[in-house]
Image 1 (tube, rainbow, N blue to C red):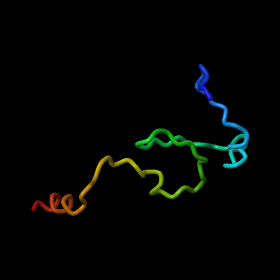
Image 2 (tube, rainbow, N blue to C red):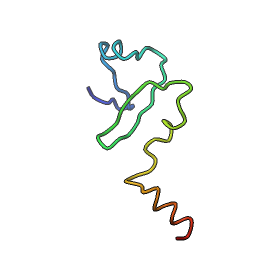
Image 3 (spheres, helix red, strand yellow):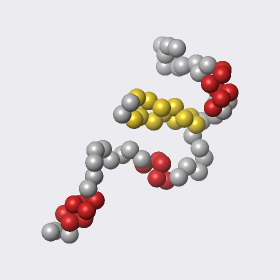
Image 4 (cartoon, helix red, strand yellow):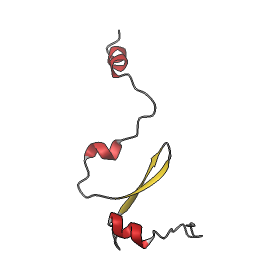
Amino acid sequence: MKITERGTVTIPKRLRERYGFAADVDVEFVEDDKGLIIRKRIKGQHPVDRVRGILKGPFDIDAYIEEIRGR
């Protein structure tokens, strides 16, 4: 597959049928450490899923709490 000059990509029919990508289905692109993921946008998506991946790297919540408490 190639990306056209206008930035479009054709998803093969067998994959559209397998994953339910019909005409007029909303999709979203999600970045991860391995590349780009395309998935159907689900109405009423869980709020945690919308912010997943915002924080980068390991995060020590205990150290953060101690820091904000001034210890």
